[in-house]
Length: 139
Image 1 (cartoon, rainbow, N blue to C red):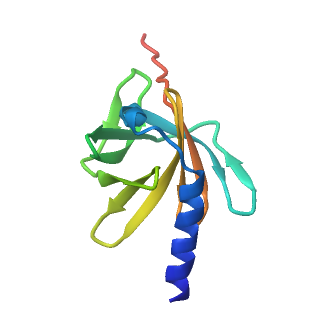
Image 2: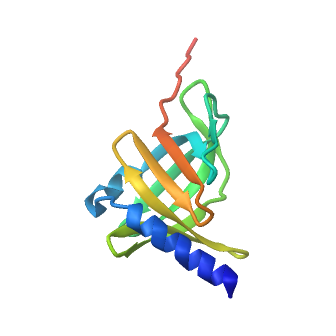
Image 3: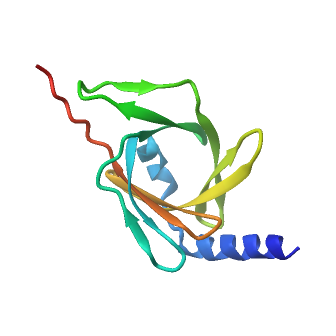
């Protein structure tokens, strides 16, 4: 019971802070690299180099997210693994709801711009992403 109350309280706090325009959701499409994680205690972890990038594809209110490995020739190596999600809108807040065989979780979309977006998970951890810019080195 306490766990449910904590989850509801966290979602209420998150929803009060989340004001992303639903018309901007198409901006999620594309390649993103994590730049920073902010923990509940305020501690931050910054990422200057990423070996993998998240690819997000959203059509209407359903989509998927998958990890891809960028290559120096501008291509990507990937597997067929993808994490499906649905957009849930509640009280002017937008959530990315993920469901797989072993887990269900949500991330509140707290900011979304052309070149960046941020989400906050149920534990209060915030993830900031920047649009990925490939490095193309051709001989």
